[in-house]
Length: 233
Image (tube, rainbow, N blue to C red; front, side):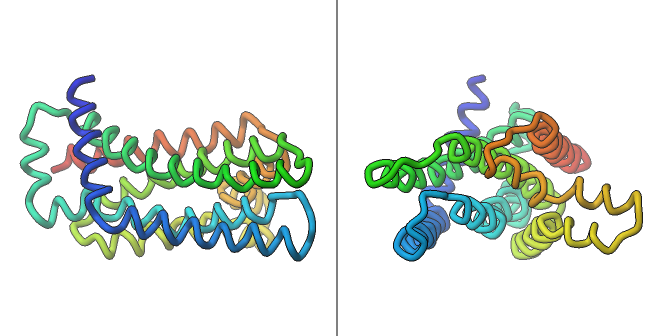
């Protein structure tokens, strides 16, 4: 546990000593604030569904910026070999980096709480879909971070890692569209892989164990693939 704490603190320091974290926080908050205000003044509605979907798309685009340098940059600079030669296990190293990135995303989601709280002051929103939507955003972020770390561990170029992660995430998000044109049973398989189809029930207030379990499986698979990539070193 002490070794995990060392890795976690190191990664948190690396994240917040770089301008990426502050740029992500600023741009994310600005875009989400614009969406909330536009919806509030133009539709006069109390539903936060459009905002939650935009948050999901923004996470798909911003999480690769957080994960692309985690292993690829350290491999390029030669510090990864130093880390792997320390008494810290590969799993502890991966988990430390995973939770550091997840902490930043959790901060983003906490900042987003200002919008439903503000809506509560002027209206009476339905908190069921809001709470489940935030749970869905957290589960989605967990799966994306683990997958991004796995891709970062496979390459020494952080730009390649970022592009591959973004491409993979967008492909999975739009997999439901591909399922429409595929024959059975491939259509059900594509829809089952879709991030959009797995995330949508959370936004509507329905939390299914199958959807939550799918995000959990992707998270665990990404962590295992990341550890496996380090073991091959």
